[in-house]
Image (cartoon, rainbow over all chains, first blue to last red; front, side, top):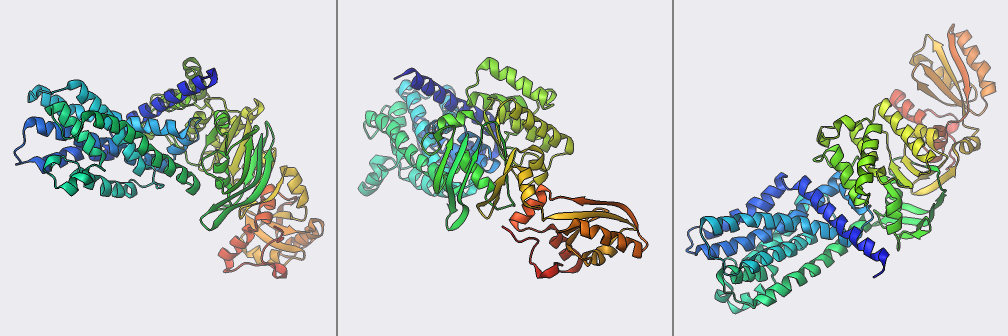
Amino acid sequence: MNVEWTVRLRDEIAQAWTVAVKDVKVYYLTPPMLMFGLMLPFFLFFSFSVKREIGVEVGMARLLALTTFFTASSAGPVIIPLERRMGTYDRLLAAPMSLATLLLGKTLVGAFFATGVSMVPLGVGVFALHVAVADFGMLLLGILLASLTFSAFGLIFASIPTRSVGSIMMPSTLVRWPLMFISGIFIPLEEMAPWARVLAHISPLTYAQDLMNHAVLGRGTLNPWLDLALLPLLLVIFLLPAAWLHRRSRVLGY
Amino acid sequence: MIEVQDLTKYYGDLLAVDHINFEVCDEEIFGFLGPNGAGKTTTQRMLTTLLEPTSGRIVINGHDLAHDSYPVKRQMGLVPEESNVYTELTAWGNLMFTARLYRVSRQQRTERARQLLEAFGLWEKRDVKVEDFSKGMRRRLSIAMAIIHKPTLLFLDEPTPGLDAQSAHAIRDLIRQMNAEGTTIFLTTHQIAEASLLCDRVAIINHGRIAAIDTPEQLKQAFQRVQSVEVALEPGGNAHAQALEALPGVTTQVKMGDKWRLYTEDPSALLPEVIDYARANDLRVVSLSTLGPSLEDVFLEITGQQVGAVHHKAQEGGPQKRGGKARRGGRR
């Protein structure tokens, strides 16, 4: 790699970081982020878990999967249409950086948010409820990988050419909620009907939930290495339609 | 600096920009004029990589924008029509963010941010969140953000509308200063007076096509037939409208404050007619002058708009034209 490309790569990484830090400062405390990213996963968890006899360990693993999924995938769909409406997204698109860098920056924003929010149930579980985590390293790696992957997943919806948060949240909800129900969060994979278990494999949340089960409980349904390999692979796959939709926005004028 | 070849943009079936060609030279202030919906902003968005052309080619500093936009983006600054600042950040935070995005070194960005905030009268407000800024302050900050990396090419989209006279004047001075220091300016505006004050050359776009492109003075020369006599009478009032319109040689009249502007192809023949009218009606001529075409006249002529027609319509329920013309001139 020649010097010019090394400098360019260093610049692009720094720019992605700059975009992410700016979004953290500007958007983390906005009402849509707090509602869709912070409160929704907790509401969902308690709605489906109250009066069900599940252990604290199982509950924590489920809540961690839910928070990474909903919190990370909410950031892009909230931030990008807001930026498009304010005209600030043009500032990013006109800057000397590649689309991949911009998408990486936006992926980091959601991932940081989800990782941070996940620390709440993790902290409560470990310090207040004395949950014995089977593999703490795997758990932290799993939270980070799942947050990155689901943040990229949210960018697919965020890249829809529109300036309205509502127009993005509707298709995003239509896709995310069914995924939640087929991913072994509320009905474990081993208790699912065979056809439902096949369906579960198309959901990225299945692999995150299974990884959380391995890390917290010490047991899961799938191979943990498969989970660890698939999550980063899905991260890259999710960025492809996001990039395509961004190019489409450039044609349509959003 | 900028070469635009056969540039075209369709939004679905709507043709917004229709095979336009023009060049912008180094260190030039180039005005891009047109009425609302003419294709100005669409063209500017294509030049700044925000919008993909349907067809055609844009070359900036030898780089084809379709394949090699990165070096162009490094040299380019953009001030859009709406001040796109981050209201949740301070003025300082906005500048630091932009400087980091353009990879301005730590020492340079703090020096440059300080210089710009002082020059724009925002230094005292540097730690205030932009949500508390006035429209003029946001505009100034938006321009500061666009030039913090010292671009050699600056795109400005309607930089002064809605600003107080002092802020508008300060922004025009800054444009001149940057141009004197070697920055090429591409100014998109519908404010003819501003283009006339600032631009070395202007292009007038209408219905997606370039209708004229030249220096402001050359354009005015080309439209010598759009001349006028301006008269202020005492007592004034709207009562003179029909009589002045009926004077021989008047093609249309427009009331401008306490004056009447009478458009004619022969001002020297019209002058005695105006004086005779004043004498006959026992009116005092407060002022009387002949005017050549302004850039605004040229613009209206080319774009087929007619200030007088709007005035008449409001006054009397329909356009008053002599000789049955639909609009003054009629050349496109």
